[in-house]
Image 1 (cartoon, rainbow, N blue to C red):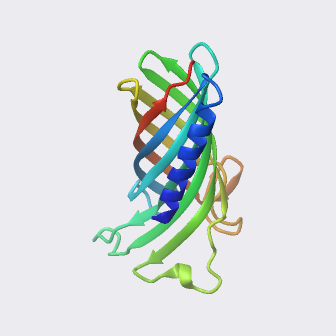
Image 2: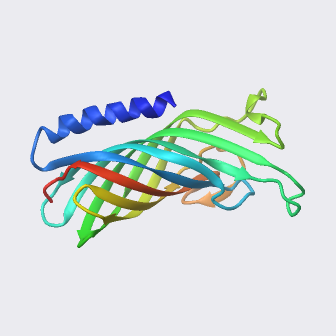
Length: 209
């Protein structure tokens, strides 16, 4: 878990630095739980649990609008548990990323709608099928190191410091190389991360919207 701790300390440094520059800047910390799947891997359902943890800096743009920059540790992947229906097959794919998101936010009362792209860097991965570790095989098709996602979420402002967040995070490009089978999305075939995040944010300092 040393990677999340590094990210948290880096976020604290960035937040303190940015919020000290202008009254328009705010920032805080965020954490949550993740349910994820890989579209195109023949399994279905957001069965792979994970965590989401990091920090954010917010720049007020006047009116109800703001821009938010996030840096977070993000656990994704896919899981299939053995059942009679699937002939007792099991599958597990763990994908751990450091992900940076740039989000546009629009506030309506105590609710905020947010949307924007994010890019992820793969820090580690693990894959097994029927308890056989396939990611150790020679010639294993490793997941791509860089990913690109689109995010859409809703935030509820509990009080001046605490927020509750619900967000979708969906790959715009395949997480595998082009020779890997899968589904068609946007402009290419492949396999794609899909994740749902339920989290909380703690605002250390509010931005002036």
